[in-house]
Length: 487
Ligand SMILES: *Cc1c(COP(=O)(O)O)cnc(C)c1O
Image 1 (cartoon, protein in one colour):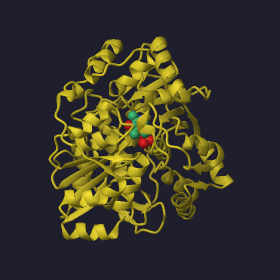
Image 2: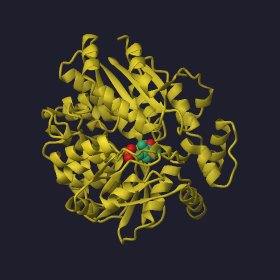
Image 3: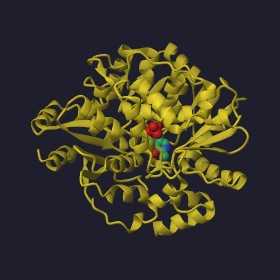
């Protein structure tokens, strides 16, 4: 299997090289050169566990790894999860299923891919015989940072650099990032929002002078953001696993279509659903759920992507994004490299682009889009708890609200991307309670309401020592990076 760039101006590379590169040299994202298909055996699928499905998916995209290697990576990666089955499908009622992806060490779905990525990446470096140490450059809206620091903590021959926005991240997210024990970590608060941080990362990744300096020092960049193909492929696994669980429980008949709703920011998670569908999984409509930063809702309605608007800091901060990177992979899929390149140039230069009617029509055939504002989000948390005795995190609440905007006869899978413990203050406010100043007390309060223990992964988080205090402007990041790498 080979990978090409969405902008069509970069060499075709192996899966191993695509993993290492992160971003293609023409600024595009890697996608399979010929999209694979899986001929699903429903009886077998219904019996398969997460690891078996993981092997099936990973070997389909990355044929350079042996089955034994992949089994090994998967078991190592998910050893820290607090459920043996890795993810849980929770029936909210007889038509709606929540796919809980938050049972990893940082309590958000980023753990699904970022626990696995270090294994894929270090093995790819070994297999290609490269000697350089990797510098994993990461922009985060709050959850990727913690998960990447966790996954790459003290991994041999790697440094991990995380830029998070100084406003918007929750107390718990900040504490997870700034107390990370890894000696290979560098964590900086950036004066700006996620889009600013992501733009700087893309610029640094593509800076030829910096690349030369790094090469001399025996270093090379890679990325833990969802622009990395390894993250996307790892995320395809759980859609197939969810389908398998619903076959097993009899909620779905073999081949029956399942609609999927995904709380969306950078468009990585929902693109993985689209890829699962392209692989042959019988998925119906995919619903893009956004918050008050509803660029995508507007785009799927009008064909106009307009990032020229005020950035809102919301109660679902991991989705506070105006430039959704992975949309580029979808555009490539429906319209090809030339148009994609053109649109991405427009976006960089004018902060907006407009697709043609045919493209819009194709997009609307596969996707619905809707958003929830802050009131609708907290209302959904409150009502879901009242009616179903289930506590949603605000990101998942956005998805539950968006899902309600569309009626179909099909079974609904709603992706639950974070634990309510991770956003305790927002959840408590939604329930009409006043959060305490002490974040640890709020965790206890959520535990009592949800009738669940405080997850072990965060039980002593607020007693840990903060190691990183740095806050920098966008313009200072390049120099700071060089200093931290000794360049
Ligand atoms: C990252 C994140 C999202 C958005 O996922 P994308 O792949 O960026 O679209 C949604 N919810 C939570 C909790 C997240 O951390």
